[in-house]
Image (cartoon, rainbow, N blue to C red; front, side, top):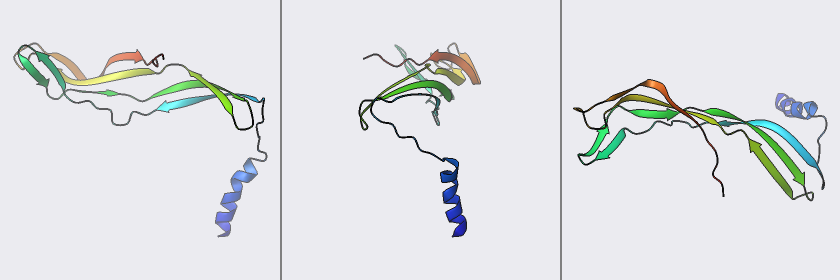
Length: 129
């Protein structure tokens, strides 16, 4: 029990003072955001044409995780009400694909996508309102 009490007091010893904000305070902070897409594999590629809907079995895609730099400004109007502005660099997303795309079926032309090879890169800009 003594060890648990000592472990609980370590954060208090490290953080010797706490800062409280009040009305009129302006805080600037810089940080980062990690976007984790988890298992982001896609279903098999499907294409529709007058010949029908064909599925390219064994194809798929993934979006890899990314990191975003963020700048935040916080203004305390009162002790309990704040305005917060957060801006960041749009993330650069990489799409990786695998398999062989056959949009016209097995007898038609095919496009080898590789084995999780980089297919495309894009920036994700948030929509305007």
